[in-house]
Amino acid sequence: MYSKELESIKKSNRFRTREIFDENLIDLASNDYLGLSINKNLFQKAYKKVLTQNFHSPRASMLVNGYTLIHKEFEDKLCEVNNFESAITVGSGFLANISMIEALVRKNDILFIDEEYHASGILATKLLKPEQVIIFKHNDFEDLENKILQNDKIGRKIIAIEGVYSMGGDLAPIEIFQIADKYKSLLIVDEAHSSGVIGENLLGIFDYYKIKPNEYHIKMGTLGKAYGSYGAYILASKQIIDFLTNRAKPIIYSTAPSLFDIALANESLQHIINNKKNLKKQIEKNLQIIYEILKIKSNSLIIPIEIGNNKKVKEIQEILKEKGYLVGAIRQPTVKSAIIRLIAKIDVNEKDLIEICNLLRELNVNK
Image 1 (cartoon, one colour):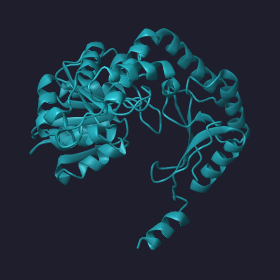
Image 2 (image 1 turned 30 degrees about the vertical axis):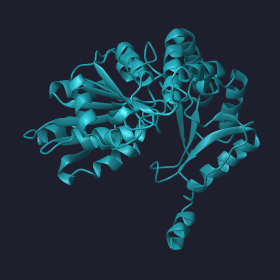
Image 3 (image 1 turned 90 degrees about the horizontal axis):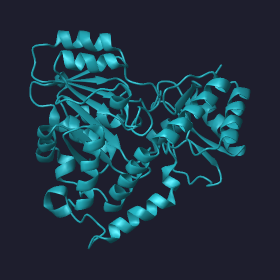
Image 4 (image 1 turned 135 degrees about the horizontal axis):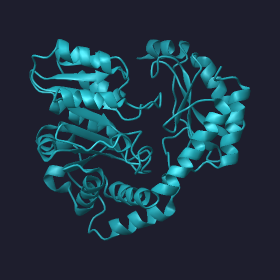
């Protein structure tokens, strides 16, 4: 039925399969930035927390009776440490982006979205009218401001960016926050890859730039990356969270997030808060190793190495697998040009990180 389409994908070296990787491979591919997915102490604490409930499944939507004390405790903690007024947990980052963009962009509003925003956000724009969506050049705050000025006589202006971009590992410039303030625009910040990794308190881009959240700010974060769990959250003013609760279809019509996943994320958040000093040292050490060997300077743990060829990037991945290392081989159309995506996870020991960097240098992948 789809043989022609599949054959076309294969010919362009874009065919993908699910693979159960050898657990003995040293993981430099996943988004488990802090290595918390293997922390059994956090797992046990979350397990014991869920056991205190009469049920271990949310059973229903947030708006029926799926909302529990476990959800509320985590939301309250997120608000406290991030200095936001209100929060809501969501089933995934994908659902969170669909929720925000589909619900918040109303008639006569315009969404200004970075061209490298997460695929979930780009997909969400298809639910809007074409005239409601303006894409600006990646991290180009001048292009953003020009486009806002060209579309000034509109309803609400909503800007969507990421704190750390998932493929390039680059940070959103502070000027975009300043432009949002200048034009009183709602600012959606997807912190999937920045929360837990950057900032004085490892809370993300708001923390990194020391920006105090205001009524125009919306922060979304995921739990399946630095937090070593699964799910997502949205932080904003009470008015915006109330509106999402009443209008965002993925929130209204989805079963509430897993109790265990939320309990585990709460334990991870506390762990990050308690150990931020040591975690930051490990992050800085790994980034220094990357710079010394590969001459790549990064503020995040995502290290993209451009290869430019879909076939070659898979070949390099296979060579490194044979050496015992797993890295990401990201191909078009996910990225404009194929890359090796190296994640400098802090649970990878120094010796192994040095070795993988030397192997990559020997392969001349960053030339």
